[in-house]
Length: 352
Image (cartoon, rainbow, N blue to C red; front, side, top):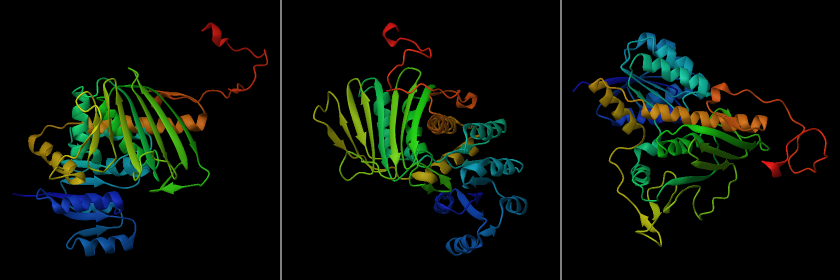
């Protein structure tokens, strides 16, 4: 069987996940990589003998024949690289998450790919592992009743880099239900940066869907995860039970009428996970000629929540959806928690 020739733009962590996946799959042949750093290119040539390396993606696109492109650069460059890739007769494209550095940019990327009916992968790892997929099935099957709250605790990570995964899982749990609003508070006392982005030291993100399902996410350099030995924790609270799991770790606890004291469930892992699973799913779309954008669309909604949380923290306000239409409100001199002076307008909360 002829393999799909694949090229990767970006030799960092995400790019190498794609390279390893392509190299390990029987469906693809990794033929080229582009990275601005000469030392990275040299390392990759040693790791993947026979590949071509390029100092920029445009030279690679012009010189090298490829069927599939993986865009694995840092988020603000995703749109430029993707649009350049779409000028060539490729058959499929992977764009790392977050799709872009803003929801507006991510939306443009997705719209341009959709115009071409081009198979697409956005490699959210939780949708390529047995534990989270089994949890989604149980929640949708009503095993904890009606979902009301998703709590997320994550230490040593941030809203945009890890939170995009966690919020994407929340969006998937709700079946891409439209969001009503998001609020966020971030403090940046340690001036932390991660994966090319300035990020928070500590943050809380709070969001609500149109039907009232809440998500509360704690992220930052130092977050107390209140389950001993865990650095990531999810609690899914329903009207008839709850589920707890621990990010990438296999296994979860289920507490409901069938398991009133809680039951630890450790399913067998899938034979193919991670980037490889997403790439091979995309290969199936190429073969069938039918593109499914469910994951990219939910990824875009997760990106909107991320952007909304940062906007909320910056402007000290609630951010309604769609986030693209956000306009910063005028600053107010109203300080919650301070005595009311009896002047300056306002409304009596007792009469609401």
